[in-house]
Amino acid sequence: MKKPQVRLGAFLSVPGNHLAGWRHPDAAPECDMDFAWYMRLTQMAERYLYDTIFFQDTVAVAGSDALKAGDLTRTRLSRIVKLEPTATLAALAVGTSRIGLIATATTTFNEPYNIARRFATIDHISGGRCGWNLVTSQIEDEAGNFGLDTHVDHALRYERAIEFYEVVSGLWDSWAPDAFLRDKESGVWFDVERMHFLDHKGKHFACRGPLNVSPTPQGRPIVAQAGSSEPGKELAARTADVVFTAQTELAAAQEFYADVKGRTAKYGRIPDDIKIMPGITPVIGGTMAEAQRKYDELQALLPDEVALAALARFTRGIDIFSYPLHGPMPELPEANSAKSRQALIMRMAKAGNLSLIQTARAVSAAQGHRVLVGPPEYIADEIETWVTQGGADGFNIICNYYPGPFVTFSETVIPELQRRGLFRTEYEGATLRENLGLRAPPSRWDQATE
Ligand SMILES: Cc1cc2nc3c(=O)[nH]c(=O)nc-3n(C[C@H](O)[C@H](O)[C@H](O)COP(=O)(O)O)c2cc1C
Image (cartoon, rainbow, N blue to C red):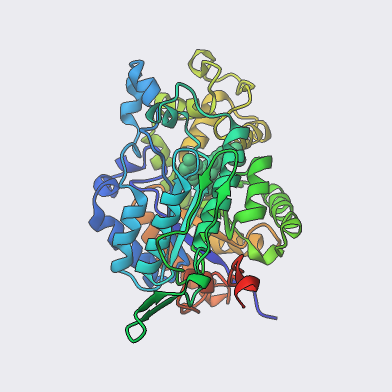
């Protein structure tokens, strides 16, 4: 029987996902704003046959409220500035030819027409390798940049996200694939019968359409989704081709996997229409002891107050700094921003019986994602276990800093997965959709036009 094929995403969390990663002697801390680094890392990911690269995004400087209030701890956190990801994808498309290109854009602080047009354009530029990570904005600082004093309520954000997706996907279906005749002889540019007005009128949006971009090479760009709360899972089942998630234990990951895939039927979809990809942060050494030493070295670069400042992002509503460092992790009021991430942190603290500072330091190491410390064979074993036991279809590789850990994972774990028959040795298709093994999306006009 053919073994399941592992999907791999290079989650380029530059200059590093570990909060002190940028301080590592081998790190390139300038790679958050240096496009040459983005290109080098993406071309490397393509050489190693990753399905896709991925950029997360926020439309604010994280922690800007705290900075305004004079909290200078924030000046020690990296990932404060970044290149706008869709413009970056377009530039990366030109220097690559096979790898997928996924970037985040929020439904909370955008208009659907602009987003539909931007991602459709990148799908054309890249020859069908583009994806949109649809998020509902996880950091509260964003509200202040868009005329609001407080963040939009979680339920309302999801309500808007569903309608946003309906408009975007509708606009992507504005034209039948053969609508544009460009017929010099007859002088007819397009067939009006093959054009569709969307005429959407909903609670949050009114949009007439059509989109002023023709059908894209993938039919529609890939849609990724990364919310794990109840409405997040429902939205994923309804809209997502790829689901990014933070999962630290196999049993919980299996439950999430079965839950999201189990919801697809009511939207006329099948479980295999969604590829579920949790994040993992590899810390690789020749032996378990060497890998552990590397992890300890990194953690030693992280001051306690920086770890606490990072945890404070998930603890709005209580003053985390007023609690004893070595006391138990305090109970948190339910978050309005990253609900599922907050729940995961609390589960992790309870399961490990962690103190406040232990929790903060564990979260800083991978922002709630699973850290795998060990030799390449051990990392490959864990990947194999999760994909063969219904915990994941693949993983997003999230590195503590760049480029070292990314190079090491690519050079050691990928060949090991290939030896085991779990990962491709060449790209299967020309588009991201084909490489992910996904079906072509049905156009809402198929029946009307055939
Ligand atoms: C792997 C991963 C990546 C994410 N990337 C982003 C991001 O770039 N920007 C953002 O605003 N939210 C991001 N999120 C958050 C979710 O998309 C979602 O907006 C947030 O978690 C709130 O939804 P939830 O309560 O359903 O989890 C990410 C979540 C995960 C698991």
